[in-house]
Length: 112
Image (cartoon, rainbow, N blue to C red; front, side):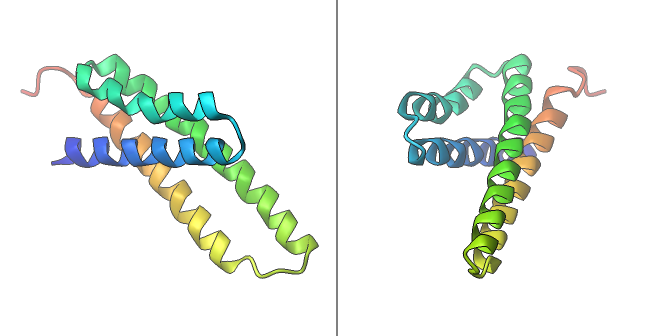
């Protein structure tokens, strides 16, 4: 159950990141990000570990975007509440996916 949730959150997080970069016009990078979750089909711990670390980098991109948008909204005297909520949830989901997948990838092979 936890493995399925972790895989789902990982896929969603990478799709969000792909959409973010696609909107910025980085089509090739967005396509690569969208395809990365397919690596989970190989069922290797190392792949899940690398994908988890990639999500930590992705969360840094979301924080950078959050800070940039906050300045933009303040500069133009616009309310930031909705964007803050949305980006906060995206950052939380990305970090949750990274943490769950990291914990799965570093568990010992023998469970008992």
